[in-house]
Each structure stands twice: as structure tokens, then as C-alpha cells.
Image 1 (spheres, rainbow, N blue to C red):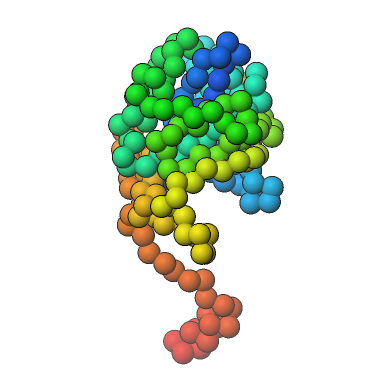
Image 2: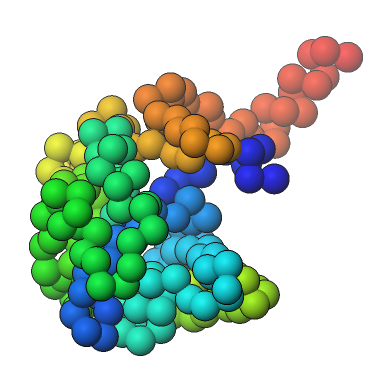
Length: 196
């Protein structure tokens, strides 16, 4: 399944432990689920012993997190934050990344990321003893100036240059972009009549 639902967007999640240690980790079980209210979802797997990973534990304890979008320029540093460090290690520091304090939540964003969404935990769904789906409500968005067209509010995909997860160690870029308009029902019916 994982290798066929591709490319999967990557949530580069930053959290803070109750002790104040910053945690960062990438998750490719991630997507937006609602625009109003703005809700996104993370699928977080527990450790092999069924205990919570730092991300899930910190979100449960603090009720907040930040989702940073990974671009191609940050692929290597994102990979560093995926290493299995202990809860006392600040992954941003290990990767040489810059933490910027949150404006609406007590959780930093990654300065080097082109987009960041500050979130409050909306709901947690225990799928099994091994996995939880965490819904977050976006309370603040940070978008690098060159990524958004202020006239149309569309994102510039070339400037965003987001990457997605494939199977195994594979990643894919998002610059192979094309537009495809959805036809009206009348256009589809008309095209069928022409073929008949």
C-alpha cells in the first residue's frame, strides 16, 4: 500500500516536550482534510514497544504542533531529523536548522521551510495500539513571500519545490506539474455523442 499511494506529502512536524526540548520529525502519512475549518491529519506510528514517539507524546502533552512543508533544498536536513534520537535531543540543532517561536502556539516552526502551519490538536483517533491519527486545526500560516502570488493567492509550485515520499528511501519532486480542467457534464455528454 505505502509504495502505491505516492507521492505522499511530507509533514515536517515540530513539537516541544513538557521539559522544553524541541523535537522535529518528518511524517508522510499526512494531508489536509478540510478548508473550513482548516484541518490537517497526521498518521503517527508508535515505537516497536507500543510507546508513543516523541511527536505523539509531545502533542498529547502540549496540545500543539507545527507542520512545516519540505522543499528539495531541505531534503538532506529533513532526513537528519528522521534519525532515531532520544527525547532529550533537539533535532533542529542536530540538523543545523533555525527554530522560530510560534505566534499562536508554544511550538516553533523551521525558518528554512517555505511554508509552516501552526496547529492546535483538534482530535486524536487511536486506530490501533500501534498507530494514531492526529487531527490539527491550523491557527496560523507562514508562507515564504516568493511562494505565494499576492494577487491571486495561488502558490507558485516552482518556488515551493515541495518533495513527496515514495516507497522505501525514494522521494519525488513536484515540478512535473500540469493543469487539467474538470469538464462540465454537458461537455462529457457532448463528447460521447460525437464518438457514437
